[in-house]
Structures are given as structure tokens and as C-alpha cells.
Length: 237
Image 1 (tube, rainbow, N blue to C red):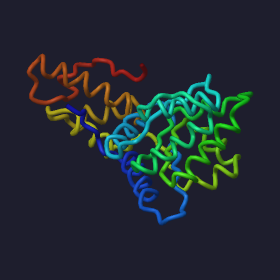
Image 2 (tube, rainbow, N blue to C red):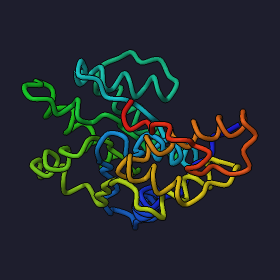
Image 3 (cartoon, rainbow, N blue to C red):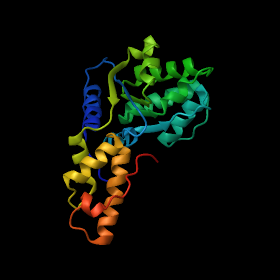
Image 4 (cartoon, helix red, strand yellow):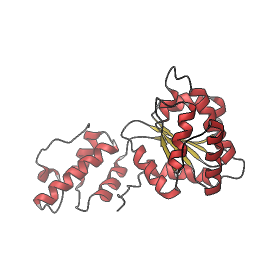
């Protein structure tokens, strides 16, 4: 069974951005950069989008070279990742185009580590795959990755949608609560957890799941501060 996804504003922004590049006219740029701080829900959003698009997913590694990046993508497609870099790129481009499969590259920060000798070649390879396949490529990284990508003009020009994930607002917190918990959550409890976690979705979700478990064990009909009894909220993991 697939886990429930709370369609908060961050996720909706990503879905909207992907919809733009997916339906772009021939010859248009089709890269998306998703970036944001740890715990803002990037991984959950990416998984949700992957389930809708049959994307090829790879997680960048600080140990990647150009050839190992190609091999990782080919392996993610489900083929034998052996051969010269040029042959591997040709195969990737053909598979993406033939099967209309986008490419998602998570942890893109690892490609841009200071002193990484293959950085320029890997970025140029992603640009080449994009240009030749004409399929969307979604790159995912931390907050500072946006500035680093913008400094690479040739790559930055291909990024048509820049999506930044931020902490949730109070309405989003209610959306998460209603999605994750089948036991009513009172506003006083939700306000308290929202304040304690400063809107960080990973911590909000963790506390809601913890409260749900306690509510079921104790047969609560509602999760509220009185029932919660002064228990401490988890604000880091």
C-alpha cells in the first residue's frame, strides 16, 4: 500500500513546475531544480512525482566520475551498466526518449563539491542528456545549490523551473494532520506542535504519528493538549 502524501503547498509547487516542463513546446527547456533545507519534504515530494511519471531515479555520490554517473543511470533504467561513456550516454538518451521517461538526480550537491575534478564534465553530460532526449530532468539539492547552478550559465539556462521548498504554514500543518491521522487533532495541540517544530514538515509528521500511536493505545477520541499531558514534542531527529 502506498503511503499517504499530504498535498501541501511545496508539493503542489513542484507538481505545477513539472507540469509546465512536461507540456512545454518542442525545443523548450525542460530542467527543474528543486532545492530546500533538510526536513522540508523534498524526498517525499520527489517520490510522489516519481510514482506519477515512471522517472529514472539516481542519487548522486561524491565518488562519482563521469563514467560512474552514466553507469548509475543505466543501472537505474535496468540495463547492464558497462561500456564507454559515449555509448552509455547514447543508450540513456534513447531510453528516455523512446519510453518518455524523465530523469531525477537527487543529492545533486555531491556533483558540485569543491575540488571535484569531474564536476564540469558531469554537469555538461546532464545538459547533453537533456538536449538530446528532450525529456525533463529534475535535479534536487540543498538550499545553496541554486546559487551554484546559476553560476554555471550553460546549465542554468536549461533550468526552466526553480522550485524552493520552505517550512510549512499553519494551513499546511492542518493538511498534514488530516492526511496522516484518522483521529481528530484539536487546534490547541496542532498549534503547539507547529510552534515547537517551526513548521518543519519532517518533525510535524513525526509528532503526529507519535500522537496517533498514543491515541490508539489509550483509546483517545481526540488528540489535544489535555490528553497529551505535557509530553515533549520531537523537534530534531
